Picture 1 (cartoon, helix red, strand yellow):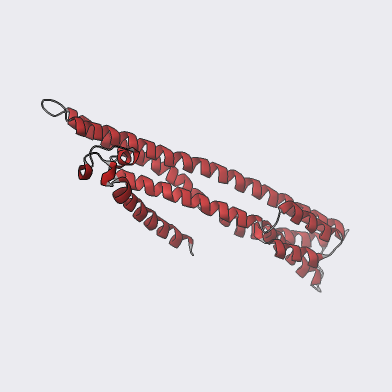
Picture 2 (cartoon, rainbow, N blue to C red):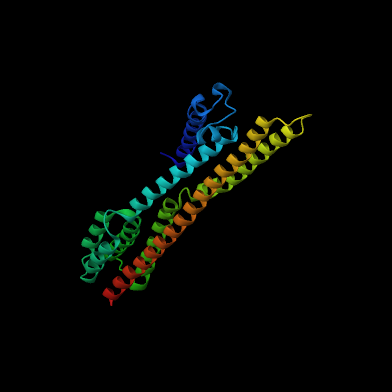
Amino acid sequence: MKQSTFVVTLVIAAFATSVLIYMFVLGSPSNFSDGEGRLKPNNMMGQVYTGGVIVPVLISLSIMVITFIIERLLSLRKAQGRGPLTTFLKNLQKSLATGDLEAAIGACDQQRGSMANIIRAGLERYQTLTRDTKGLEAEKQMAEVQRAIEEATMLEMPILEKNLIALSTIASISTMLGLLGTVIGMIRAFRALAQAGAPDAIQLSVGISEALINTALGIFAAIVGIVAYNFFVNKVDSFTYMIDEASYDVIQTITSKQK
């Protein structure tokens, strides 16, 4: 599935799910002491329902954050390959140290993942150059191998960094929407206070509840989004560093074998 299609489908599904949750779960008459009136909540779900129309949007953003987190966890796990990276790198270095290039490429095919794909691109390029009857100089061969590795890295990086911007954006939007809901709730509360005679206690409590519920939901989605974004950025940076180190070791091993 294309990235744009995935995002559009996720937005529609998350919003539809949040509206259903808001109307039939949170808005169930059993959650209110006045039943269909839905003004006097008797539990937390009814209290969340009084947050107003901003609540479904904040719920949908929370669903999207959780979905992106699951997608990133699965993608990074897939990017690491089928087995432990340390075992793969040890086997790779053993094969290169003995000059068995086919075994090294076979180890990459077996491991799969982003690191294996990048190293495989460099090894295949080196294999092609060594079979070339023109016989390039060793320095030029290593330059070509390095370029092949860099090109493969550029192809793999978007996969590792996919949806990170979406997490950061959702975290920012959640805070703003929570603030918007807070302002709307306070407007309702002050409107109840501004009435002539005794203030409308029900509308006052509903307005305050709307303000606080939207604040809480907005902060929740923002915290989860920010923490997840920083976590995945750190994971991608660490993984990228491992790729650079492994690629450098492969090039150094090949270079030493040529001498």
